[in-house]
Image 1 (cartoon, rainbow, N blue to C red):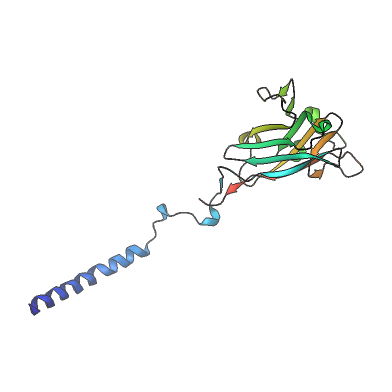
Image 2: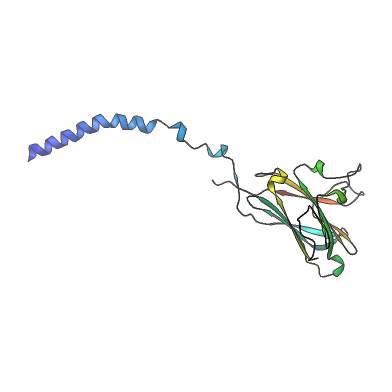
Length: 200
């Protein structure tokens, strides 16, 4: 019995001596074809849903009429006018909106003031553009849906938004940066960064 145990022990040691160098070599060789790229070189992916960003809608420069709410998902940028002021004079009569990655492409005159009549998104109670967009039937709420592909937008791209609204007695713009310095036109644009998910 003792001889049998010694034989088994010697056999196991011999097998280990033969196999161990091969195991070490295999574990040290990296299969480049199946390796994942380093985390820093991975391209982030769009999130399926993102937290909303809110910008005050200023009417007549200093009246808080409500908010412009902006968010994105995998395919779409959502922009929603929400009038929260109960004063009927601030209810929306029409909206004009431009969004893009290059602010220089926003329609403007020689002084730099935006030309809202040339904005690609427009709505009132009887007409809208582009064709197929809803009419402005609710004067307190209006949502636009813009495909990210239309903007050529992807992860972390900054989108400039010129959101103009017209009420009974006032015009409004979303909180942001003036197109032209004071004392020029007080029209402003907001900036939104496309929301992404760094985790693969």
